[in-house]
Image (cartoon, rainbow, N blue to C red; front, side, top):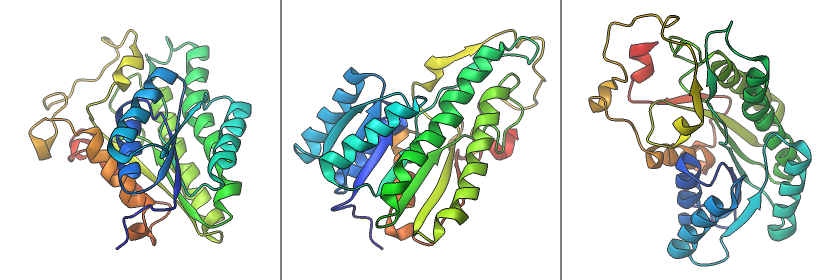
Length: 264
């Protein structure tokens, strides 16, 4: 099975930290040239420096853009094509947790912000990339979550969970549409992973609305409660982007140590 990405070009959104950084680094280590997309140049520069340190210069391209801005994404993808002439792999990873609150306290603007970044941003990323993937085929991987796919007991996460469920539906629709172009599209659904996404979570008024549960909070059976790592997720991303997964498309994969089966 071929896990090498020599001569391949990958786009990783949210590449400045966490899962995005780990995936960008792993893809580069396996030979890909990687476009690092995000909103914070200093974080992207740190990722680029790590790639340069491990893989040498010339394998990373910093592309500063907001995935929720369609024009910015068009410009970003054009920059990748102008630099490297092709695009083979897309890891649509960027997203936010947003505001978690009971529905009667969830501001419509906060709902819309979560939709714009997570759902529209994924759509814009895929839409701008597909014309270039069609030229030779390729692979798309989307980061969803256990929330909205297996877990529905995180009270207040309605906006977030809805975007994550929407990403899965989008991937399944596009898997059939893009199959004739030899483009595969799959979804990863991480559970508790050691990243900084919790920093962009705002929880409001959940104490009274939350339903009680009968198991220890955050329990992860496979690891006795220890969360997974960004590197664990990066390995799954690399597999789905590789030729080893050449017959897998339209599929969601949970990577959570059985957390979602327990919590559900």
